[in-house]
Length: 358
Image 1: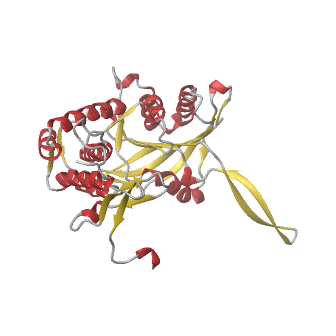
Image 2: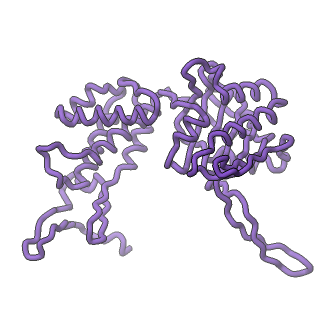
């Protein structure tokens, strides 16, 4: 069962700030000397900016191979939730941890904000939260001001709230299980740094996570799978997308997922099943945790997954054809062939009306 969470009741009250450099490039770490008290007039605006990136994310929790008591981030969060007086000391400790983990040459310097949020609504309770945001870049802003009876144009450098690169929201809920945590990394190139090395979290294996994981895994496998030795390598991408859609129909038509049943009814042949098992093993290794093979299906997440399916045929002549699986459902609207005179392959498209013209 997915956690019921509402962020619109939250209020940001205090923050610890830092500038995080890259120690490998001998860039410094600068942290707050005192807690920044957020003025009441600014609380509504800042709170909305802080919580905006955390909507519709998969839940995570702190994990440690030995004990959560030895998990540095877990200890910091527990101390802050135990008393606001610990925010500065523990906030600086969090900044120091991030600085120590930022020694890869590809990690950019950036601004860090560690904010205390009050009254977040989760599963019928009002709890505190700890919001950690890192921005790796600044954006120029234009400002028009009045001076000496005239108007002046000036520029300032600042953080664009819509382009915050990394974030984490730790809720004072499930403390004995490693807290309930939402996290994101816009960069995507190496989320291992933020999620595993700095935060040390794993996904909560609930219905939403498992449905998302298997749906995404099945779609990517069916759309990108390499053909077996006895299969043609000329399979149109819209056929692969249709196969992915059929896989998601399995999720849509059932209340629970059973891996063996899915493999038998959707993947069918032993060669495809074997390649999917290898694909699943790689995904589990990347995520750092095994995936359960039986779980309750989250219908909401199946619907989202189906909307993401798209087939793209990229041709060496500079042409791209984007096809939705629904376009091949009833009557085929695409036809492939070979032109002997030109010595080239072709794709013929049937349609009734050019919608782009309108």
